Amino acid sequence: MRVTNLLTIDLEDWYQVSNLDPYIGRERWEQCENRLEASTYRLLAILDEAGVKATFFVLGWNAERNERLVREIARCGHEIGIHGYHHALVYELTPVQFAWELAHCQNLVEAISGRPARGYRAASFSVIRRSLWALEMLEEHGFEYDSSIFPIRHHRYGIPDSPDYPYRVAINGHSSLVEFPISTMQLMGLRTGFSGGAYFRLLPYRMVAHAIKRVNAMGRPAVVYLHPWELDPDQPRLPLPWPLRLRCYGNLERTEGKLRRLLRDFEFAPAETVLDQCRNNLPCCRLAPEGLVLRDRSLAYQ
Image (tube, rainbow, N blue to C red; front, side, top):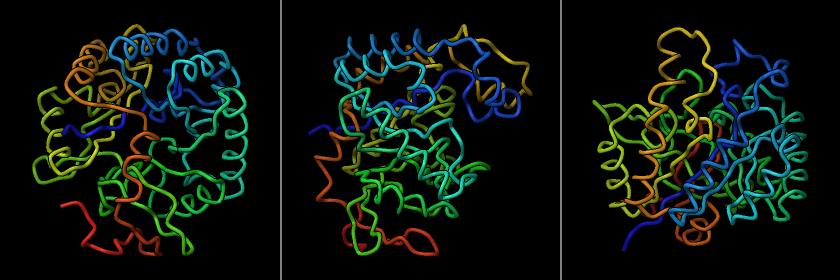
């Protein structure tokens, strides 16, 4: 039996990437060329050809300016989730600011799509150890799952010692919130990503496919993520330092081909579909000051 993996899309335009914050501030977003609609319709066509549905985590800022696009994504049968308002890192927000973003974006995308937003993903996976309080607020606002924790070591994000498989989070005596962490693999003795963003674009396809197969062999779904701008090799390119230029623009012309191959080789569904399939069989982690602590190791994936 094939494992169903999560296909998730962070609905961002080319200028909304966190790596570009020092070069294009949010006060300049309105002046940038809007390429989101064209690249997203391209992505929707690819998914339709493959017969695959996905979860689109939508920025509130984009939803306000592209209502027709968000409505079309929902009409095509894809799940709509929340990605914050203007791609601010969670650990740079106060709890009051974060609560406003959640409520505002929930009301906005639910009104546009006509469906409840069940899931959330933080900008740049910015639920880290010092912002784990965000999980409590997600549960308070009625979210059923989160996909914001990247179990690696990175200068901007990551909780390297957190579980790298789906689990329920025990918060204030409840364990209704499910975490879908970003999938990882071991490379030269280090935990690293492989299933999205620059990791997916820069790694050889065979390595990505092998990593997904290893995750699936343990009975776990892989969490794959993509941005519409990664299907747009003709986007404006800034004169960035070489390492940053590679992360932002490396292999953009190959993303579509790799995605098409991935959709042929593996089973995918929106996060909410996988949630409904596996929620009752997940191990539970306790939210504690030292981080996320597995409550019952006998329930962990083997």
